[in-house]
Amino acid sequence: MKMLNVKLFYGQITKNFNIKQFKCRANGEVIINADVIAHIQRLQKLRQWYGRVIKINSGYRIPAYNSKIGGVPKSKHMLGIATDFALPLEEFSGYT
Image (spheres, rainbow, N blue to C red):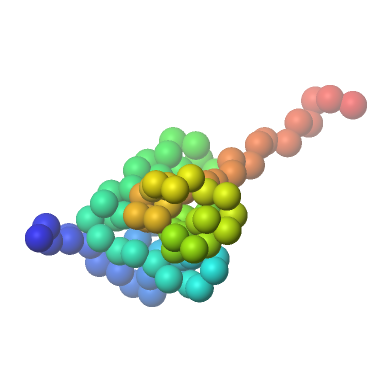
């Protein structure tokens, strides 16, 4: 088994992401393993590049919830390594 080299402080995985953001909306369960941590660290790199908030809409899903919302049968959400998110756009100030 691969050892995780991560420190959690009140669920904080990276500077901008907390494990609570990735919990299943059906029952609050979450998975933490090396693949999930690596996935969240990649999202952190995207967040740093983007320079603004990334809103997490969906992370981990239990199979029943994934099915209920129409997720594909082998969705990576059920492994905790897929995330649906929104990128807020900059406001346009030059248009009237």
